[in-house]
Image (cartoon, rainbow, N blue to C red; front, side, top):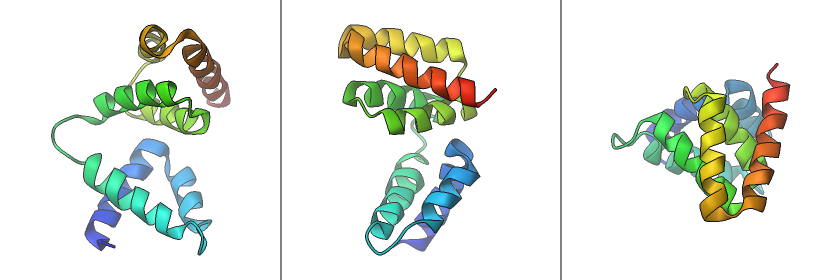
Length: 124
């Protein structure tokens, strides 16, 4: 593991997803999934999320679209929170899901709208 990238990733992951969620995920890691937590933190958050080519808001837009296409509700909810933390508005998130309805299918977009509404309700 590259400690420098891990720490950089941990900082970014906390900024986007929230420290409470990230710290819980790291604390709950065990022998089975610790390597995955380290990989995600170092590679996804330390390396890719910190590349200079795209800002965090743009990366969130891409993630919401991809997670809709892949039908990954748990990750989508997490990244809806992250998108809000990265400056997206509810209206922008709505537009992303409307766009995905065309290219990923209406059922996938409907599920994303449903999951996002749950996140919005939790944040009230």
